[in-house]
Amino acid sequence: MAFSETIRRLITNAWEDGYVCLLGTSGEDGPNISPKGSMMLFDDNHLAYWERSKKQALANLQHDNRVIVVYSNMQAQRDKVLESGILRFYGVAELHESGPVHDAIFARLNERESTHDGADAGVGVLIRIERAQDARGKAIS
Figure 1 (cartoon, one colour):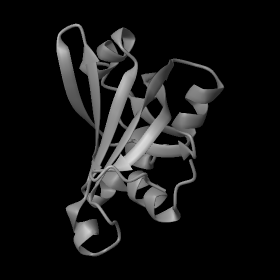
Figure 2 (cartoon, rainbow, N blue to C red):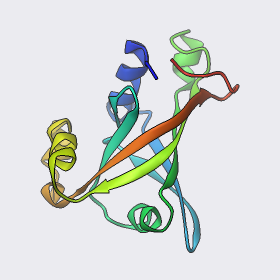
Figure 3 (cartoon, rainbow, N blue to C red):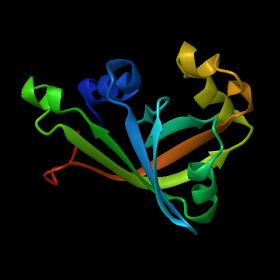
């Protein structure tokens, strides 16, 4: 999937802009939604984030690696930056506790995420995007 520079910028700057991405997972105890301030478009086929809290989202990913990432920015819709202010990315997550993918995700973190207490002990999460669509069901590009 090829994503526009606008989509790349919005996802990469989501936390700084005040529109943090939400990660939906499912585990033995049911669903969980977690804000992920480090979410980024890693490439045209993957999202990535740095899992530093190592709480429910990580436990759920070890149970079921299917995820949804939701970006919601109604202001971007009102300003006509986006046709729909809600973007959904469905995919499958891979956990990287070490190695080249782990290091590549860490290298792309913004300063706030990479210098946070315990950041260096985090897990890189790479999400292979299976489909991406807005709230109306239109494919995102």
